[in-house]
Length: 225
Image 1 (cartoon, rainbow, N blue to C red):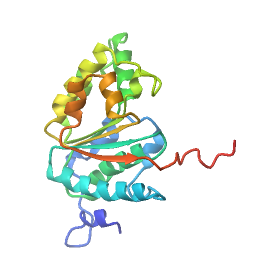
Image 2 (spheres, helix red, strand yellow):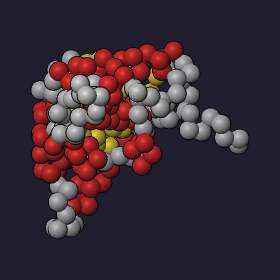
Image 3 (cartoon, rainbow, N blue to C red):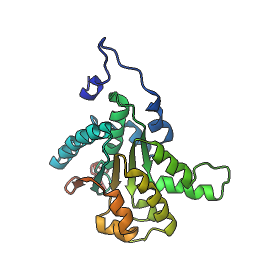
Image 4 (cartoon, helix red, strand yellow):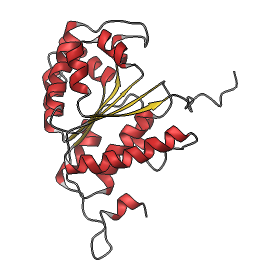
């Protein structure tokens, strides 16, 4: 039995029933890739030292999030190194293997804005900016996945629209009092150029960072071109 799972076992050796906040992660989250739903901390394969460090840091992040500490944990690196895998794994561990009655929410930022833009021309859609801001407000632990990719091609230096920056500012205001996890392919300077210094500063409050510099894209490295 996994170490985290033991936290759910009661004195009779049985798993405690899930609490009412359990369903938010699966029902309300938006992922960029459906394979993310199968991700867990234990299934993340570590072949580089920085990957091993990321898993150790994730365990610390889980403990701090359970305590309700306000901080941001950033996973920075190129596509395919497992940032989203680890971010989902952290929420999944909190949700599945601890007694913490936390509402966990995972939002892929490009997918979120796709939903918001779609609502402009569909008056019956409930996926408005207000909907997502309310979700973030309600959640106890939040992942913002693939921050920066919503503006277009990565490294294109595309600036975010005023609307995008406004929505992110509202979201970051809500994140000031709770644990958050951010994944991105971009550097701090690129993010500041894309949004503004205030938005990035809020997102980086009480920050802890894992940067993947040597890890290869494990999704394509075995493909023979």
